[in-house]
Length: 412
Image (cartoon, rainbow, N blue to C red; front, side, top):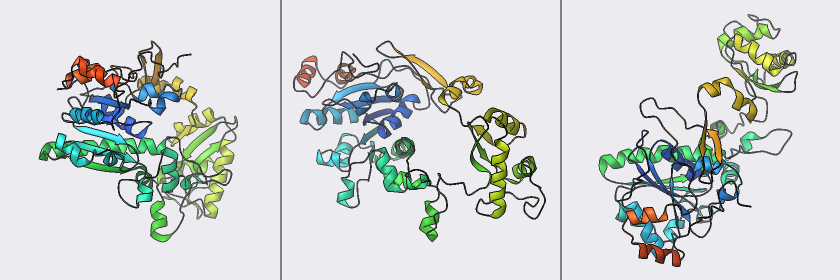
């Protein structure tokens, strides 16, 4: 039986076992969420090529792989598949991200995995899914490709630049959908004794979160693109006197009752009648209102405007820099910055685990492992002898980066 002797018992997922053979972002972040909530997570890394995130020269990898053990395994080989199936015998959830059908080509179909563990929940993450047109299923896709294909990038068009995606949006949205659906499936698997296979296509998830795609699909109308003025007057990003920016969102009867006179317009008129809860930017009165908000905010610095409008209980925020976020007193009061030490002895600071659980709090108990760090411990737990483990190293089924060449800070 494999289990982590170092793993403290904490969080709402204590006792759940997760294996992930994923790289880059979407799969690892889904597994990381489970590790942060107390699950026993094994990261199976490609023995022949370190995870591409190790080459990004970013501390993000230490945040996205903490609280896990690492097994560096050459999965497609005969021995590699044997090791993986042995691990999955006791796992609750298996997550993989690859081109659609990759595991089937290796002979690791869902049915083969269920022979090892009938209750296993399997999450397949790919750009274009496991079914559909073969030439699409086999297409390579990373975050920005899924955003572009789904229409999400188009939703961020503006008159001044080409359409643009939001950094890693497809990866993070996919990670959240993966974690949620895998845990939903685990609930059913524990009830029925029957496992599940989940087909997570990144482009589909990005279609789902593209807010106004439904307007086009229903009546072929492009309702709103993020880079253009908002459909709601007074809702948007406005420059202030000091060159910084304020985000406003002025909708709702109570809000407009306060804002309209504040920016120099008359409330209770035909233009802005009492009880109005929304003013469309496409209308003459909407354009006039937006212009009035713009001119009003240009008379103050962003901090001055934020302070004044917050005193009126209005929904605004200065566009904070990373420095602003780090120094913000509410961020500090909420303990939203955590610090821990890597296996190289470096200090890492990152956003804390969210959300916060009152009765089953989360914790950071381990830094991100180096490649192959836990090979021996894991394999011995599933019955491999020292001689068998040595043979796996000799045949490059296992590898280990004992010098931590692919960990931050990079070796010179």
